[in-house]
Image (cartoon, rainbow, N blue to C red; front, side, top):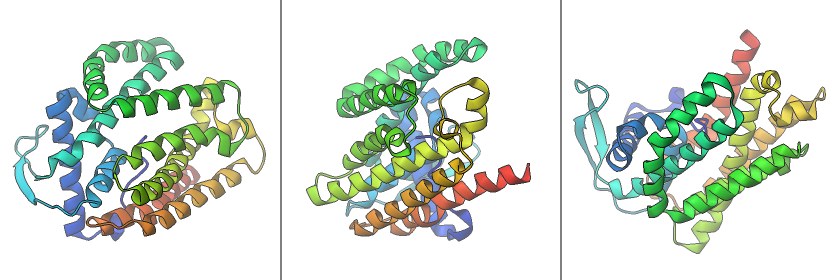
Length: 280
């Protein structure tokens, strides 16, 4: 997960945005409490979405409280009282960032590689703690990393096939948000589609850099006049299918915020990236 699951601020009411920020700040605080201050710096919109989703299917809502921000003690933030629902997303964040560090060590060269080697021991203890609490997430992520790496090493030229490991990883992680079998099936579909969207967005944003580094990128592998058009179609397919799955969920709270992200935020993120490139 790489920070592509964002809200559309232009369509978000102030009260709803404040609630979104409260969940974001609460997850930041939970990361710090469970895994140390450095872990707060890994917080992304994607894991905020996972936290919202995890909380949205529960009936309970214990309200919010005001507290000081760890990064800016002069600033007051709102925090959720439902901190138990933040445990799984924060553990997922730590496990995924650790594997991302390992992946970067293998792929990068020079100073960047040295930087990630330095980071590895700083996150290793947090990773071990998260793995102990949620071994199933570690298994999901480790399998996904191996499968994704093998597909890329084989220079996969199928859009569906190359997205599959990331999509399946999100499918399984999203399913952890519920113990209800019907909800699990819907969450799996939602997770799969969002996972595919994330992989394609990452490929879209990194294609020029990957070309310079001679790193794998499905868009560069396709290397045809309609490569971007084909990827764009798959991005929109993923967004539309995510919306279809979301509509089947019995969302108890945060429905408007989650709907904003899925119906508007996913497309907005893509269009902003696309329009920024046109203006360069």
